[in-house]
Length: 327
Image 1 (cartoon, rainbow, N blue to C red):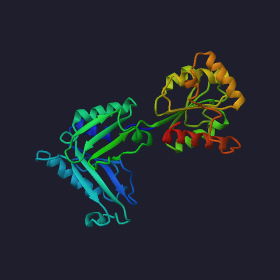
Image 2 (spheres, rainbow, N blue to C red; image 1 turned 30 degrees about the vertical axis):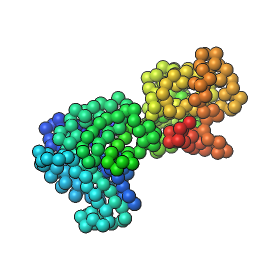
Image 3 (cartoon, rainbow, N blue to C red; image 1 turned 45 degrees about the horizontal axis):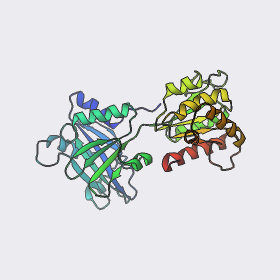
Image 4 (tube, rainbow, N blue to C red; image 1 turned 135 degrees about the vertical axis):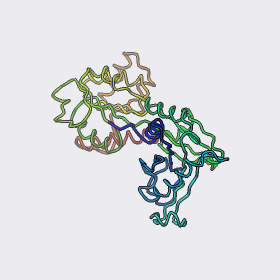
């Protein structure tokens, strides 16, 4: 499973331990900058750091600026620093950023710039798997946490500066999850591919011959009946549900849970004829036409896939399309 201890959690823990701490965040990049917007580095007053804003290119310079910011927190004006490093900047050139890349880095001391209560609220939202955006005005220092704003940024996992040039939005999305019902051959391939794409897979199958650690080494396996297991796993806006058993006794209970959830993707294996029967059963079970329309079936993009591995490719491709572009 994903380690949910990221930069905000580390910054809060270090602050609670009595240390002066600053959080550095990449707010903009141009050219071949080595880290994406939103990348973060935590710096403590003794120089200890965790994370990265440039893959090593400008970390030393950022740390020095952060140490100064922690000492200058009583000065007038915004208590954050906005730094720019690029090929035209002698300081950045000296530390190795000479490949045409330019980055802007926001440095925020905890307690003066980024208030502890707001950081605690952000950490709590991340722990609860609540998508949240951290918004900061780079000119005035005004800050807020937003849950219902910036839908496109949430969908694309894209932090960045708004068109006004002053508002930076850091998107904090929960890690992606994939819940697979049916520990079949396709699932073996899909699990590996999904993990490489950043998903935490969970495989559900009450049949011990299928759901075994020998077939899925190191993976999370749930052997409860699918509806109970799906409910236990939890389905939210960052979770995909894929049903692969081809057995209505196993697929349908999970589908009913999935259709009542906020899962961003629901896919079910089976031919067009099989899906027509599935639609009839779900209708009889009380599902609406709009709910049933959420199911991607036959599952996966039509790429002419042949064999379990290629079918897994088609499923992951369809999941990605829905995640990034919508259904």
